[in-house]
Amino acid sequence: MGKATPATGLAATVCTALYAAQCVWAWVMLDDQHVGQYRATHVLPLAMIGVMLLLKGSKLVGKRLAHACGANKTNARKFGDQMWQLVIHVSMTAAELYVLMGETWYSDPPSSFAHHTRGISPPLKPEVHWLYTTQLSIWIITCFSHHFLEARHKDYVLMYVHHLVTIALILLSWSFGFQQMGTAVLYVHDASDITIDLLKMCNYLKLEGPSKLFALEIVFVLNLVSWAWWRVYQLPFRIVRACVMNGFVVYYDDLCRHRPLFVTCSCYAFVWLLFALCLMHVWWLYLLLRIAYKLIAAPGKGHDAGRDEYEGDSDDGSGKEN
Image (cartoon, rainbow, N blue to C red):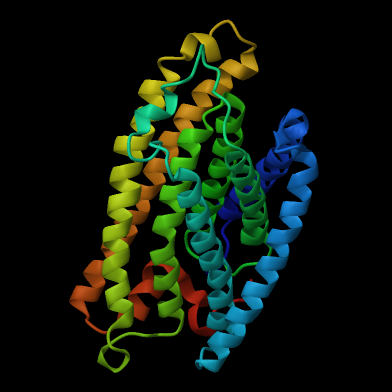
């Protein structure tokens, strides 16, 4: 990633403190929640253990595969990091599609709030609670891995903030009874992350140019279209809009007014965190467009463009391993 500046170090310290606070918050909030017939605080640790085992196994397989394909030590490590993300995103997309079967929470976002009564969510099928518990465990482990285990990229701090915002939104949507909308948000995130995972993995293996059938360039175009469609259009203009207008605005009196200060602040934090998530996605689209410009200006140099805009000087082993 290059040399860490004092500002980066301070930001990372603040993020780590917030991460620790979120872990405590998650444990306290889930103390009176149930997943099926089990207490959520009993299920979450087991889910986290399963996610950690999946993380270690996926990274090990990914590193060995990258080495077999001729990647150096640094890129093999990054390939392994991304392999575990790909496994998570594919499996969670499949799980979310299963939960969304027969529901209109994604196809018609306002319908997510159609059966709320005075801000109280209707009973949900058990699969939603299992999905939420699994996703919370994944994001807690992902955040830990991002800070302590993975190689650092230029957007290290922004990605750290993104993970923290996601954990907060999972907890807040759970406490407000907005899991239907939360499931749609999670689906958009996981489905659109599959192409970004494939893009990074192609980049680490340098699958660019005619000798590699332009694999990197093709996946880049697919990812650019996917990112713009899912993250910059579907999420803010359909899902977040419905969440704010049909959820927060309609049920403000029941959820927030005349409630303890922490609850009122949480209501506003929920909305602003959704907006922050959308803004981060716009920034990453801008980054992708910068890479696209360099690809057009210098065909066959996709790996170099990725290094300049995203990977930093740790790419190809020239920088410090983190």
